Amino acid sequence: MEASNVFVRWRPVPPTQPNTPEINKVHSELQNSRVSISISLPSPGDSSWKSGHVFNQVFEPTDGNRAVFDAVVAPILPKVLNGDSCSFFAYGHSGSGKSHTILGYDFEDPDNFGLCLAAARYLCEELKGFNTGIVREGHSHSSMSELGIGLRMYELRGNAAFDLLNNHCKCNIRQGYDGQTHIRGETEVLDGGRVRVRPIVTKACWSFEDFRQELLRGLQLRASGVSTVHEESSRTHAVLELEIVNRALLDAREAVVERQSELVPVAKRATDVYIEEQMKGLVRTGDGKFVPNPEYQIDHRRIDEAEEKKAEFEKYVSDAEEHVHCVFRSSGQTCLGGKLVFVDLAGAEYYHGSSLSTHGSRSLPSPQEQKEGRQINTDLLALKEVIRARASKQSRIPYRSSPLTMVLRGHFEATGSRDSYSAVILTASPAADQYAATANTLKYGNLVGTSKNR
Ligand SMILES: Nc1ncnc2c1ncn2[C@@H]1O[C@H](COP(=O)(O)OP(=O)(O)OP(=O)(O)O)[C@@H](O)[C@H]1O
Image 1 (cartoon, protein in one colour):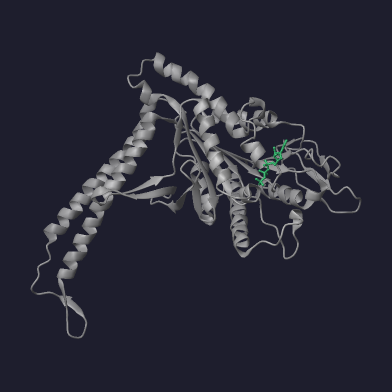
Image 2 (cartoon, protein in one colour; image 1 turned 30 degrees about the horizontal axis):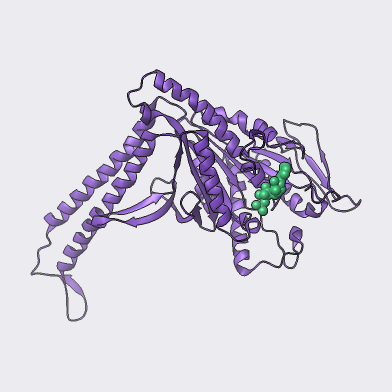
């Protein structure tokens, strides 16, 4: 059976707190390619805890972002170039290094890039090679076939997503008829009654520089969207999706959105005509009952015409959807549609009554914060269950338990012959005053890494 992938990254003690006492942490030898961790407080007799043999690898405080990328993400990128979907989650308490790991704070020095930027750099180099091949083989529409990275960035708060590449626009999370989850952005009412519901924005990046600029723009929006960044950023899940795309695929998807917008007024008219005819075909009697109107013959031809028009427009939508599949089939590039997802998870809420756990001086959470905290806990438990259910190959995967797992379903579920991979990176602080939070993080990772049937 496949085990869940869980890595641990110890951050260094902040240079501003050089004399902070540290947690005792011991890592075992490899057992079934996994290590266990024991932690205890520096003063003897105080709390201690030991995990199972569940962690793939442990990174020391001296290991930089490059070491984490080389060991955790780089070996998986060939899968993305094979069209697979790979997800990486960073989980840890506030200040433990989630953003440092996923996004990074240095956007110039490749050794310090966060995992997302380092992965984009690698993919852009590889795609350059593919694109040279496309031009050399003389594809008639090489500008439509040129491969790049489509970037989507959003934050999840409660039941909604907020688009970081589209002005922090609030988006709804809905399950479609196809069972897939869709994140729907702005609803635009256009001329002729057309209603366009755009999906979350995908920014096409045709070079690494494009990607870096879009990422920075999205991050700025995240930072400026809140007043106390540190508190806020740990209360939302930030999701970054990188998909290998070409112009033909983006245009084909755009056409689906347009055809759907054209269907709206035609479908509405079919419903209106039907209701109108049914109403005309009834009269109200003196005692308030509705009975067939002997003076009106329902115009079935009118209803049928409206239905036929609706069927015609539904066909345009299904043709447009089919064209998307056709772009994949005819591209000849297995990497097209390959996805890489990075999630900076919100830290679990673990306030209990008056116990403030690691936040020390922080005041008790407001009712709104408590509500958000409960949602975050639900999301994190649901994510753990999904990862475990997938690792133990259960027939029913509980995706619908939370908005987070609904949103990530498409990335977990492989389509056709495609495959998926996921890993959790636990970020932890060795500072003794963070012991409760660190133990909480490692316990979560221990649960994720312990498959039920193992
Ligand atoms: N492994 C590390 N090496 C060096 N510095 C680190 C490391 N991890 C974190 N830091 C530094 O600690 C500070 C806080 O880290 P970071 O912002 O990544 O925390 P976080 O877990 O994302 O917090 P929050 O959930 O509150 O957003 C940053 O200045 C970051 O550069």
